[in-house]
Length: 244
Image (cartoon, rainbow, N blue to C red; front, side, top):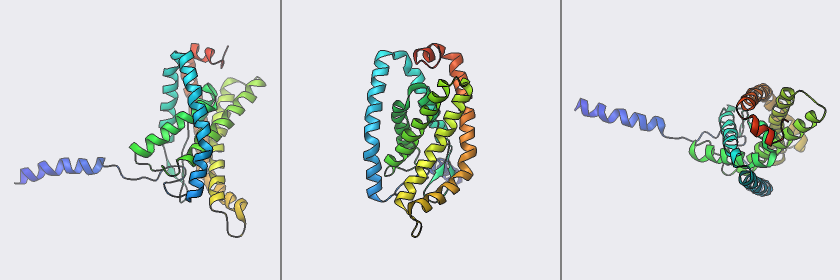
């Protein structure tokens, strides 16, 4: 009998350890936003996703050799965005990984990659966030990449060193994600006396403690990842007009 008990105990323990439990680890956690804001952000994000899907389809059709690089950027976004730190009630901080993708492919394809990553984390890693998916997509996969792309293009236009442009674009794109997250939370939960601005100031103050070092780390990691891509995928960078 003792042998039989131990035989059952081991697989049962492994099952319980591997059983996924909700982590509520998204920028804005599952069920945190009022329904009106959850639906509104989903509606705002949907056109960006559809445009991004169209752009990826055209890119893959015209340049099928880009599939591998797209997959690498998707994996980069997944790994960095899975490194989550609790920030304030209803949110968490983590690198996003979306800035590098925006630099290489533009902001719209990153909307699709970021949405897939968030869905994967919500459904398969039990991070939650299905009801707040639209809001999280807007902050991480739309706003952040748009800022990163704009900063990279502006710096390259004034002949900034490539490594500096990559670093600042990834760092500030990450910070922009959390500025938008703070705005989303402030709009949904305005301060009773100071309104949206006072609420946003509180969220930004708390986010800054964890997010600034994470954003700098993401900038450095993006430079390292870019150098790796430059070494192994130089032809693709030329075809994307990142280098000449």
